[in-house]
Image 1 (cartoon, rainbow, N blue to C red):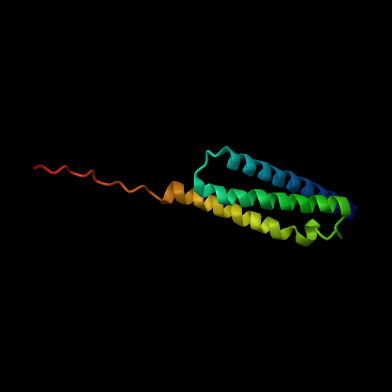
Image 2 (cartoon, rainbow, N blue to C red; image 1 turned 135 degrees about the horizontal axis):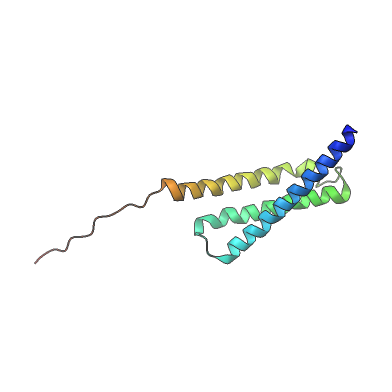
Length: 115
């Protein structure tokens, strides 16, 4: 009974993780191709899309060939997912820095000289 519950739990988690990573890939691709974001967001979005795609591939390999597959999520899925989390943290850190910490410097207007 407990083994069946854990198996169903892992299958549900894999499905949710698969959907989330596919949505990250699609969302990052649309955001980058839209060209309406500032330039400092683009590079982390490239990596977010790539690592979301690779993580989705590891989940598909687990579904197709089982957990003994060479590219199964249990074997190599933690690496792209960790890198995906690092990219998301970098992107949110850049957003927080640009939004709340970095303030534009107000300059005094240049006074005109009288001749």
